[in-house]
Image 1 (tube, each protein chain N blue to C red):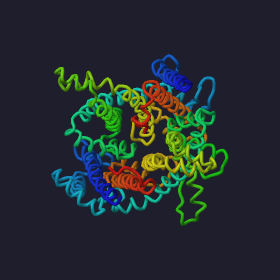
Image 2: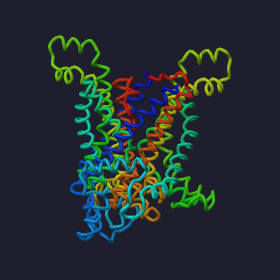
Image 3: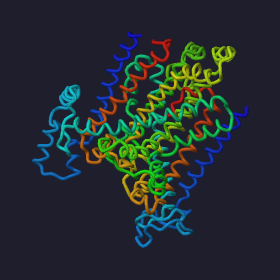
Image 4: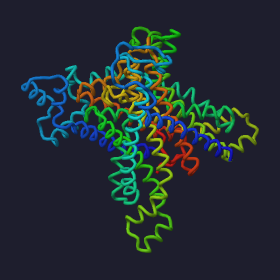
Length: 277
Length: 315
């Protein structure tokens, strides 16, 4: 019981963190008087002050402003990628779990996609597609869909042998009805948890790709890009890279806590089903 | 047992084949011709473009390219780098030692730190130490490692001056000068892995602690250390080793970022620069090589099950 309360507290803490970032993303133009892109060399590399909460970068742009606008971009990219991975993953996960002949071939492909260490796969895709915001989203969809497929597939395999599925079939339900009305609701809990983790991971990987110069093209103020800008000034202006990193950690930690909290709340048995990484 | 090992090696081959095919399909997905993308970055005349297309074999039908590519990589020939004008395999072998050292050392550090911590947390679930470790382990997977690398660099190299900030010196220049440049990258990479492994060690140990043979061992009057390390940990190790194997593969991915942060001439840095320069032979060869290493590592992990726990279900 105590544990349940602690984890619920984690869930609430996670939701709070994510809400703060979301609020910053939505109301960015009202929270700052500066422009995220406009260059103002006179103000270059100013330290943290009352005027510039997070200091300024080498082009005189306010880092606080860029981090706020970065929230919008990083959350947007992560959310879109996670959304489409979810949709595609559910469809193929259902088919793969339900039809064994399809699964035989399809699971090999999913395994093949999952053998690449995550970021390496992202680099390969970006090298093929070229750097742009849409391509980052496509790369992440290819990266996360297999993970969603696996989770949905294993729930389907567990559920399809249940009596109520047979009962539905006896009553004359067709495959589509069985899959979407009877089986899918049983896969929802692990799916939601996996989606929360994928969202968290998408934010981290996007920042890593942007940092390497293979993500969102500059001067887009994504969190990874700001850190990448700041890397040449680690010694004399460390604030440029410190604050966006804190923002990433905050968002990702929030999402991880939401994932953990939801998992324990929805079904404690999910511990071994959901793929953390 | 031997049958299991043979069967496991045989399933390794189709997986490798699918992975290699995916690499081929994805790099040839480039809109137009990859040679155009290379030229688009650097600017060359039309004749040179034709020469480049022929040199890379992009003028042939796609299925012929695929078969030729498979034949070549089966012999360890990944083609010639567009930028370095040297065989890709030579460049990879030259660079891989650095990556292997970082990934391997950080795996070692991870195991040394994480397993005792995970065991301690599992011994007293719900204690303060346990809660602190669980929060820390979420933190560990939430912090972007490249950023964490800069923070460590800022603290230990810039402010405290304990280690050089970045750069690499081969081990032949002296062990100490090599090691002091490896410490920060290794600990950066280990941070997230420690978080992951603590979590898994804890949950595997908790599962084992409820077994009857642990009660028996305690009832026999064995010391707690013996119960924990000899009876419980050994049985929990089957789960733990999976995570260790997985963490090596993750380290290979993470090394890409770490090598970039600390300016280390490893394979990750090679692949990233190649991706920016659009040096496709290096991208294909480098990624195929890293994937092969990750797969071989997984194979070893699976086979090691049979040694650690002979009762493992081979089906």
